[in-house]
Image (tube, rainbow, N blue to C red; front, side):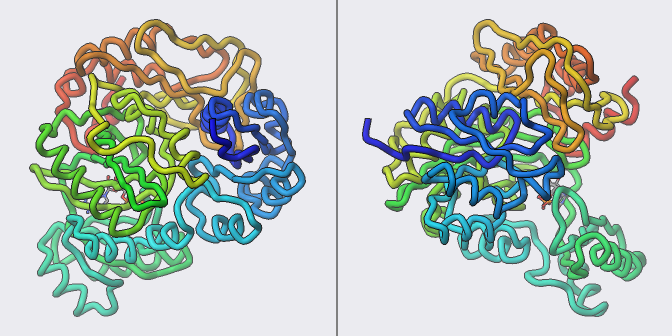
Length: 450
Ligand code: ADP
């Protein structure tokens, strides 16, 4: 095999650090793990060829500490840095620093991260790239008069969104003109307090959308291929918990149409890495909400229906190789579902860190578990509560749901509370089986789940 990189530093932790490490190993690339003092005995550290402690438990001082990560790359002689997801993955300044220090950033160009990280610029870019967007103001709202006429033009209900908002925060629904000005003042104040930036803009509020996103990959030679969609409609407080491919609501022709349109847009954008274009979908129409310029948590469902290893491909592309497949090589087989298992109380949804006394991953045909857990491991309280992803593949959706239910029943995670009871309840719910839901469905389900 042609040599890609000799050594890659993985600037992350948990299941995704392990997933990247596995891809590197299969490509014959040595790995460097970085870790906080709280993660000294974590699985990603145990399995890597080398490891460097980069700081105390708090993420700000460790996994978000760009200087410490760059030093670790320097002293170990790594050639490239993979940021995973979360932490520094969508930090354009970090990506620039990586490049300026002479390393390869395994991701897109820093300027593209910067554009897509700014909600208004991203939306303007989507319009330029001919992607369908949610009707709304093209810029931040300046005065009360402008807000009133913009809302009228968009039509109620409207959504006030903070320009600097993120993680599902900084959004207010307004149903009529009578409450617009008060809501605007409050939203500005909250945005100032929460994000240090009081700019807000208006958008049409979609009242029963599904979340459907398109996976793309591009190389440095202008080739861009789409790998179909993932349906991530089952969310609570805007956090995805179950994802699947294909979406139960799209026909093959609709998939082809949106996929082709997104791939063309990314070709114009000059995008060369893994990326996901997220849409809300309502009554047969797509509305762009954002682009994630990184690997996503739910990438395995796409891997299972396409039979492609997205991370190996992402690393190859970063090393300057052309895409190893074209659009016509991509076919979709069967149905894949992913459940995110969090260390949390399944009812209050409060994080529940602690010691895992026993861990057993499910197995059998069509079952994959991505996790960094082991028996005796203590889940630290400092980071995200995602501890395992169970992903299943079967010939059709109904069979995949049954396979998921039996896989969750086999999973043993003793010593801490997890979201498994909720995930199992969902597999057994009629609306889920029939795919009759929108992004608000799970919130309503949880309100009277007992
Ligand atoms: P964030 O950056 O905070 O994740 P997004 O713009 O991606 O913000 O939106 C997060 C979620 O908020 C979406 O997945 C969707 O559930 C909801 N949302 C966003 N925009 C709208 C809209 N115009 N109408 C209805 N729901 C929306």
